Image 1 (cartoon, rainbow, N blue to C red):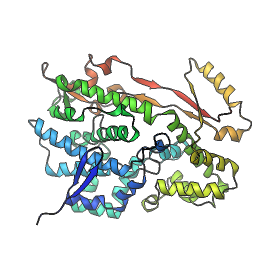
Image 2: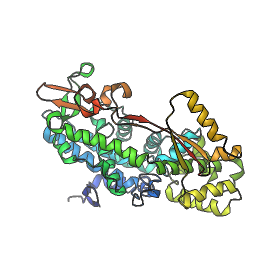
Image 3: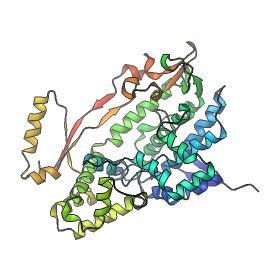
Length: 422
């Protein structure tokens, strides 16, 4: 008797089919928890339709991994992916974001900015190893599956081309989130011709000096270069207009300072204090972590708003609930002396030190369109292209006539978020 698969309707990929042996993984509490974590953190306060979740994105990465694998099989002469490795890639695609916390990167960045040690990628590894439900499902797929999936997520899997399908500068993760985030925000910068890219993708033996003969995933230079550039530039512009949007980052500053304030000893009796404090210190169990999602944190915010006697905490929460981001001041210093002068003038405008501590936030977003060998430190982290005429398979940064190599698309800006009165 043939086991039934599960069909899921998706606005980006239309039909996503989950094979019967993976349905148990999708139905775990840990995976379903991702329904309650928004993909774009607090971006829904700027783009009202950006309500999509980490679960929908994870299913999309699963689907894109399938498409990449099928394209590589069709287009490559010497593609020898084993069936177990194919299954590993699909499982890693489903679980690559399993460790995300509430508000996705916004909450994680707040904990780390305040001196905590939280990291969602490390948390993914912990969940795979320590969550009994996830671990047992993986072991039914293969005795070594938990360890091997973790190797892929940590970029330590023996076959780099397998890991690159999930995590690289051209991977299933980015292919899905650019298309999905563009659609859900209405910001069309991230759209690109994914069908044409997959038509021109293959596995080839690299000819580049340090990795000559190693199998790498690459794009046909003659046919796919322009669309590849469209994909890279699309991601660059999505960072400018969505991920690093001034108001999105302003609300991330609000989240940061709410967490900073709640960690004060005086709030230890408020609901959720203990959970956030243990997350901040890193002394929490996987079971405790599973209880945290956007819905839980927002419910705590709501209770704090009505129960706290701390006027500053209440005011910060008011900014969140009534959509009042911190005011942004962009500054690009020409010299350390000028920077210090302007900084001192700004902070001296605050009436009290406490007001400055909670209504001043420095943000230094850096946006790099393409990370070459000198940025990544590893040539295998690059995108490879196949130049038929020269019979070479080399990293994109070694091709000098591309728009990416000829344009300086590396920007960093200092943003100060302050009270509007300041």
